[in-house]
Structures are given as C-alpha cells and as structure tokens.
Image (cartoon, rainbow, N blue to C red; front, side):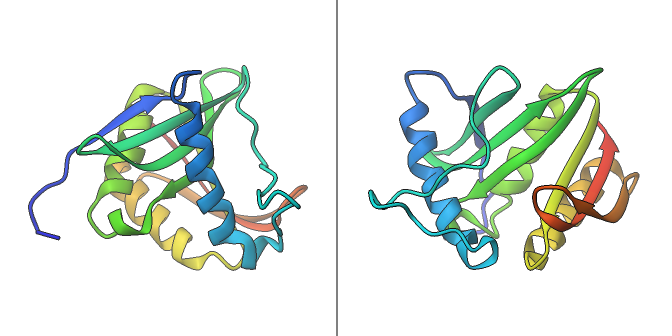
Length: 160
C-alpha cells in the first residue's frame, strides 16, 4: 500500500448490484458479532438489522472498480438522515476510504444527520468523531443515550 491518495466512488444499491452489498454486509455482521452477540443461521448467514426498503438506501463504495465497503442510510422526515450501517473492508482501512465515503454520502443528502455506535465499539466512535469533526469543522454534538434496540449508544448529530 502506498501513501498516494485513494479516490473512491459511491454507488447506490440497485437490483443489479445488490448481491455485492449483501456479500459485504455479511462480513460487517461477522466483524461486529462479538459485540452484538449475533450468530450465523444454519445457512451460515447473519440476519440483518437494516433491510433496504423505501426508507433505507444502500450504498457501495468502490476503490479502483473493486467494492471496498457498504453503507445503509435511513431517510426520515424533514431532511433527517441516519447512518444505520457502515463498513469498510479491513484492507482499505487507514487509507481515508471511510472518510471519503462518509463525506460523499453527507454531500448527497443535505440535512440533519445522526450516527450511532453501540457500546463496545470504541474504535468506531473514534472513527466517527474524527470523520464528522473534519467534515463539520468540529460543529457537531455528541451524547450518550439508551437506544430501545441497541441499549447504551454514543450518538453524534450534525448538519451537512
């Protein structure tokens, strides 16, 4: 790996590429399974917490025409959005792929954003603080709260 800049391309999930999204989200679920306590089913697949539907859009990030990660974004009322799932393949980490991916999503969806991390995912919290601070020039809020589904979470909110 070199220190040259990596350029990423963010593509919305469609019926033509959804198989790529579903392949990568299994890696994401497996990585978080020690924290979430989830196990694969008898087919070896993890159940997904976020289904892609009218309110939840999926995205794939590409580096050199290879899939490097996925995201699921919830669209709520009044230009409010939430990062529900976000994953970068370990090979592409520490190369600003996740940062560029997140920034591209926030530029596409202008409004009020919410990002949450479950307890035990401190490395994710560090990532999001850094990426959001860079994007917003430190203009974001962070709080701890009890999520009805996930329990104790750290949450960042900001405007894009």
